Image 1 (spheres, rainbow, N blue to C red):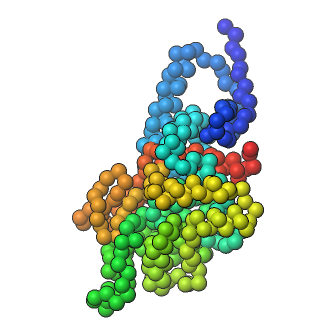
Image 2 (cartoon, rainbow, N blue to C red; image 1 turned 120 degrees about the vertical axis):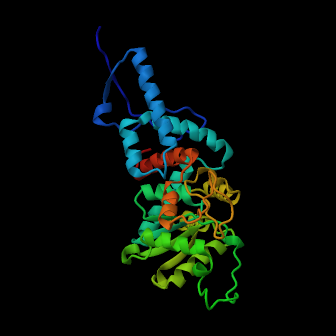
Length: 326
């Protein structure tokens, strides 16, 4: 039997959410430049193994990392194909798609790199996390704050017993836990640079409370702390900077954030300041006598299959933009 070699041609992978069918291409490794044609039974077994790898990927703990993405591109390209198909289904319930997520993440990081040089992003809650997860994979320093319910927190500076509870964190144990989590992630280090509190500021209250808690720590220069509304920042980038973002794309993101649809594709849990709620596939409650280190690990390990698929595809699209691949 004569063995034939099949060569893979590069083709465009962008625009897969459009109406026209387009071929899919992936960065080639030395092992992918040519493959030996295999018998159908062997191909079926290989496909089964790759499908099993994809399922393990979806159910893996934690956010999608750059290292994980690079391994998939080199060794498991079928996982990216299957993730793309899954995202096509998820997108039917969203205004955004992974391409829009990728473009916004790329443009935000580009803007912050030029304006701040050295900065740390505090990504507040679930709304901005699909974007900031991709920004992290592109190289931005991001700390994900799994805090929820701050809009309902009564902000009374003259509350009872303020002498014993001088700060918000001291009054609410879960907020103190979040500040400890920030410290663990390096927020108070001298090289943290400018601290950008990134949130969807429907009322702005959540971001203001996070800023207040950082002020009350008294270990970060106040002039280094800034609040950034995702939508307003994107509109500034669109109007004032050399950007490919469109008003329509900003509107799609705004719609998903306002309706909390971003939570579907977020690898960040809800963790309420007053410990309300219950342990579920989207909410974490601190267990009795649970150490804060165990809780921090649960924060880091939290993930959802849909969110991991979305992050993988959006990361792939963002690297195409970074590498100027059309």
